[in-house]
Length: 163
Figure 1 (spheres, rainbow, N blue to C red):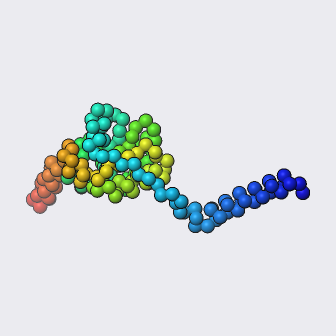
Figure 2 (tube, rainbow, N blue to C red):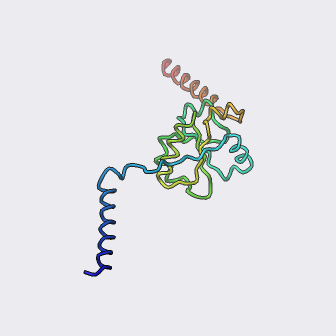
Figure 3 (tube, one colour):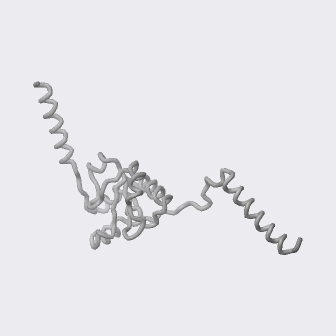
């Protein structure tokens, strides 16, 4: 056997061994390098967002109740558990996806989840809504809609009792 054939056989064997080692063992489930999360200061983001909101999709990943109590102005509520379906709709190019939650953990989970599906156009608000409020940035509340719902339910209960 010639030297070239031995060399090619060694390269092919090494390649096959490496594939078997990675995909045939639990090594495929480990991350050699921990993924990084890009954070942005709330004030910096809001300044950019105010100038051109069409460049961003500002997502609050908290639950609906927390979102209705108070949320960053301009954000839309897409709770963490809905991202499985939302990932098929969200753009991977053209707009930046900005994630916010209470303190940064849930939006970090959302960030990593979307990153796993190939999203690279994301940033997380540093410190979440807590820091957003601390910085005095604008917030909104849907408490009126909650009170309206409570009144509606109470009215329906009264009607049921009367009948």
